[in-house]
Amino acid sequence: MTIATDIVDAVVIGAGWAGLGVSHALAQRGLRHRVLERGRIGETWRTQRWDSFRLNTPNIQTVMPGDTYLGQRWCGDRRIFGL
Image (cartoon, rainbow, N blue to C red; front, side):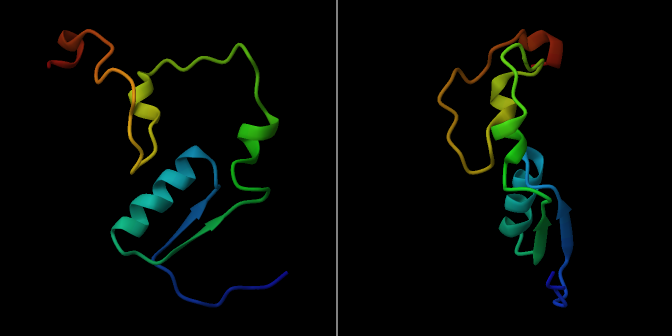
């Protein structure tokens, strides 16, 4: 194993959905950082899926930074969020 000795501003643990999003945000802010992942990038997406899984958040919240959302801009009751 190689030990990195360079100095960074942040370390992101995990290269899953959240880790990659955080990495992008850090890069946009010009912060030096490293992403540490035990397996391959996005490994959980490839190997730990199940057909019955559903999110309880609007799908617009799962768009990665810098990506274009192709669905409806809003899909809920705006009154719930005071909009």
